[in-house]
Amino acid sequence: MSMPENEFRLTITPDDPRAPERVKRLRQLGIGDLPDPEFDQLAKELTELTGAPYAMVNFIDEDRQYFAGLAAPEAEAGNQAIAGAGEAVEVGREMDRDHGYCPHVVVRGKALVLGDVCDYPRFAGNPVVDKIGIRSYLGAPLIDDDGNTLGTVCVVDTETHDWGRPGLDIIKGMAAKVMERIRERNEGRDPYGGENPLQG
Image (cartoon, rainbow, N blue to C red):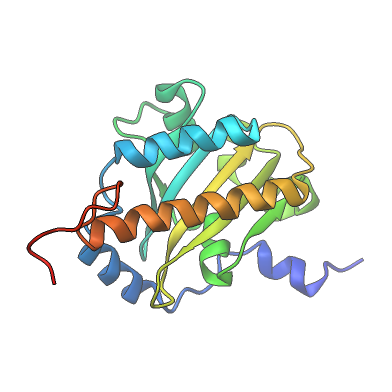
């Protein structure tokens, strides 16, 4: 029996014609290529809300994914595994663009829910899946006010997971929270709403 067309589209790395615009925007915002303690904290909060062992705030350029925010059970082991490397990795926050599920979320511009990745044969055979035994994924896009999809927030679990509406609401809520933090930084406001006196 042949694979349904919509499923096949999900199992290959999607074309991403807006990547150059996204890279330019990420550079303007000064995010996406360094670890960010605030995003690490939000990723940790996401693991607590969902019960998933891994969570990321992920920014994607033309060639790679970068986890500016990362929460894992054991940081060093988790980082190495999620990078899909068999040998030691110094940073471990980068992953090729053709690995994982976040590139699909970016191109789709909407959340992706995979309760069991084994339902998608090519996803199940991904080397990153093998490294940390991913069985489920939940991700939502980070979309700015101009419609640019900057990256994703996501969680992955080593067990199958029926995320349901609560999971979808959590991941979308966290995406909104991350974007609000990005807007606050870009507008020169502190988290408590204080205005930058040099603006306006």
